[in-house]
Length: 450
Image 1 (cartoon, helix red, strand yellow):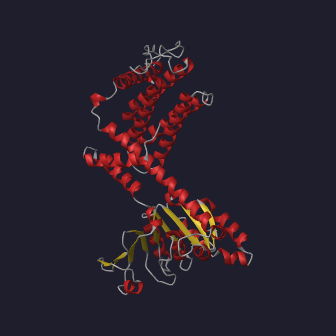
Image 2: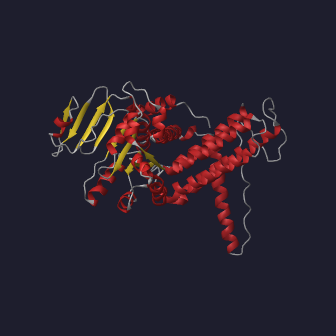
Image 3: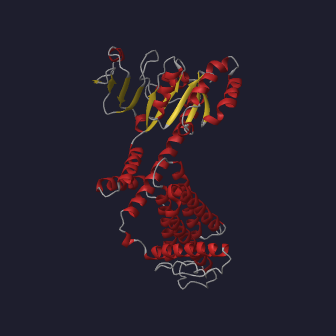
């Protein structure tokens, strides 16, 4: 299933939102997806007081913009064409500072600060430093607040003791799956010979709750960046700065690609949901009706057998036929159009198209009976269908047949997309799953018609 370019997806999603034709629920999901693909990834730097959060934040944004000794409330640094600070005061009002003067800002007693700066790193990320008080209840509230405002979390620590572990276990799995345990001041522990033992102890406790554990000598990593912007790569590597930044950027890119995949899925869904029923493919409507009739007959046959009566004759399963892909029994001879496809390839495609279409129709017929469980059940079934198709095609791929190889990639992409949908909160899962299967069937049919 070939995906459009990122720019094409962004423009198409923006156009779809401006059209005003989307159903309310789909519009909300599309707006969320648009925000994700057009805004920087949000990174939260967390940890107990004096754990090295500010130094790490300065490393991430590429410059020493916040003094290490500054005692600030929680704050965010994001991109702006000019520097400024927007402070939230204790009465809920906001005060804007057109220049960033830390002492002047702190004289107002802000409870939160949003800094805007023109830094290259902020094209891709925004960074939140979470400041916590001494009370456990306050720390839990601060972490829950940050979790709602972050895509990636960095927990700074030198020991990750029982208290820190107790705090971290309360974070949602969505954050834990995109979190790094950063062992700051690693140069000090390396100097006294305790680093390896410390890392081993942390791994025993925390490896299941973080994407990775990274030791870093943060001050050395900052010093590896020269005033002119050039970087001493060897020093950045030895300090642990480069491995950490590379790992973060990899997760950022994966998150960005998953956001575009979600956006494209919503675009396909919007086409289906805004298409009048009379414009749906005729063969799909016929197949859904035939499958529903067969399922009713199967139930009646089971009930008759339970009563000891002769079971009624079941209708034959329908084999899909379209103008592009004529129906074929599994043992059909070579299809008439053999200008580009080998006979065995055409037969394989006709069989798998029929299977995907029939199973998709069966799932459609099941929706009314499943009730609230329809979304989860159909999504699981759809993943099995896509994976079956990928396995079936992969048995014939790698044999020098580009068409089969391409179709295998389509099926694998569809399975990955459906699995991605399982990770997303909300959404009309039943409709989305059927939409992906329908698009997969159409893509395979286009291979037949080529």
